[in-house]
Image (cartoon, rainbow, N blue to C red):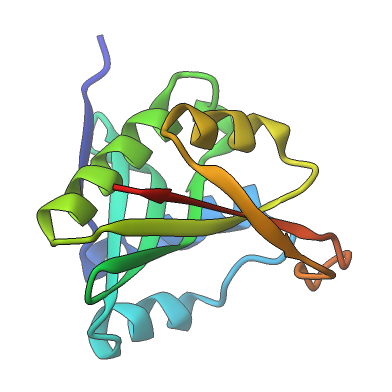
Length: 148
């Protein structure tokens, strides 16, 4: 049986997170952005999902005073469908609450109904549309938020 865990990301995880990002998105973040986020952004907090100690997913947040913004979240395509995204998102929400966050928000592609369904299970509701938000295809983003 596989051992699943969620934890705070370390600098040693950056290469693995970048690999998951490349396999998950058409336009992954450059690897150095993760390093900058972890070393220079006092508001950034990143978390990983592991299976048998192998990083298979990640989630980034910016926690500022009592608000959190999800910057990105992904599960390696080979590990999707195992509720790892749900577990990781729950872990991140718990960490946000523990850090005094009262409101959490994120953007999601309007076409990504699977992710939207998961977020709605956590009580996130639509708050608006960001037109042409995604640079790869100019798809709109649905803004979702929840009071914690």
